[in-house]
View 1 (cartoon, protein in one colour):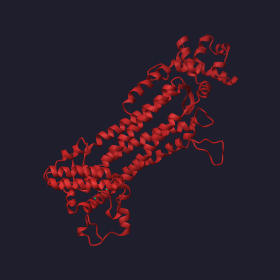
View 2 (tube, rainbow, N blue to C red; view 1 turned 30 degrees about the vertical axis):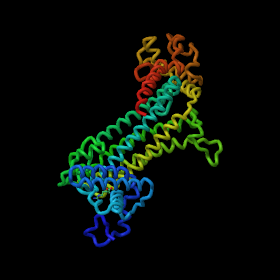
View 3 (tube, rainbow, N blue to C red; view 1 turned 180 degrees about the horizontal axis):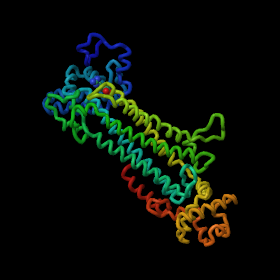
Length: 462
Ligand code: ARG
């Protein structure tokens, strides 16, 4: 049997394998709400402009509502022979209201239809992702406020560098996710032009009103060039690029959680809610959720690459290649949303072990820079000389197998005779962080202020 939607010039149906490769209904059925929404806007416009009679337009509009109800309730069985969501909806409409259904496709093509549906779908997803990221930021900002003065080692090269506060560390991620939200917001703004009315590629000879449909669907304006309108997938690529960056941020935090909760570090603990046991090793508490968030970065970044490769060689305008735009987007955004939600739960659940963190911050000579700064400030040494003297003091502590704060004054004076006992005030980690009051620095007072500012700002977003 030939396709009833386009089979006029065909005498036989497709080979089974043709149907297999051609049909997209198994995945694009997700677009059904947006497909019906866009069709209703289109037919209302056809009625308002007199391209269809008022009666025809109303009849089709009501028929589309009936189709929507059937899909919503799971009653409508989709057919692969009807290829995609667009033809499945139209076919059911025809069964319900008869041949007048065929007028819906006046001044329209599946090319502008799918571009419109997909933009509407992604626009909704972006709103959901923004909401999720705001909730994650809030969880982090609240942790930061609770732990504004909890001292931990700050790392470079994953080696203890200088003491920081756990709150400061949490706020670093609030900044990252804030930029991610900015990227999604920009993508949503640029996405918001309506392709409907571009028809197959060249526009249409019917007196359509593209402002009306754009407006009805919440777009800022109709897309200005019909060729571009049906063949552009920048909006999906931008979304995936922003998703890949956000996933990378999630992955870095996930990796830190894996490190912090390892027995070797013992900086923090996740409860039973976010860990799993081992079927053979009874002592284990594995951070599986964090590991999976970390791993999902692969498929999300891969989705961007995948769609970029689909698009890169396509001549204008539409080509069926573009049907391959949907699965990467669906998969990547599902994974991202899941990752954001799991991370939000983990951040709330995570209990830092403050004494363990502080102990680690005091070891490994993390306050060496503070001592060098003290030599500069109090004794007027040039920084390079202070650095050298401090290096000798670290070597001494290393030889004695003790922390900097455990050296005697005589030890310090053996290296630089002008050192007095005031130097000890900067050798413990808590004093070190307290002194870092420069803008953006880790001092607890700074962290408290920033955490409160974020919490207030996020109140209206989530
Ligand atoms: N299922 C198709 C897609 O997702 C709809 C557009 C079909 N257009 C066409 N000219 N065959 O791209």
